[in-house]
Image (cartoon, rainbow, N blue to C red; front, side, top):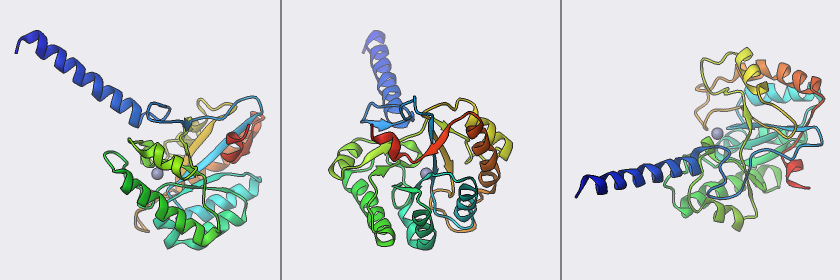
Length: 240
Ligand SMILES: [Zn+2]
């Protein structure tokens, strides 16, 4: 093999890997299928979303803050957490927040078959339905990672993928409440979908600490209100 041919093969491989990375891992990518990253601007709306719960005591603490400020949010729950803490999901529903599917075990979707993805999604839909009587229409991929076949599985179920445009990076240990507030608000604008967490990858109780998210939340809400924006559920961004 000549050096030129070898060079071209390497170049193609690098390009394929870069394209795969972009399509599967970059939150705003639409390469593998349509995902809502931000809502349409013009109505002064932002959506606050919490992933990986429900988890005691953080979900209750977050719900208390949301109630105090009269704010509606969206919770992308893991089926495993729903089976562990059905009462927390019941409270989310009773307080009129939106509920989405975030898989059962919070798995990476990389290299997963359609069968495995169906299993993760359906088991979570069933867990949520047992508690709330409803099957969510919205889905968020764990880690934001998409894989081939996911979008046809979602289509079969009439579900829509929701990503995010802004986050406080509240899963990064070194981020203190002030950092979470600053990062969340850095690029926030009309139509933003904010990602925060009330759990951590369906981990065992005691392995999760989201007290900084809870501490950051009042300042995030107050700043958003000061900008003249209001909080809506993700569903409001799906209807025209
Ligand atoms: Zn997650």
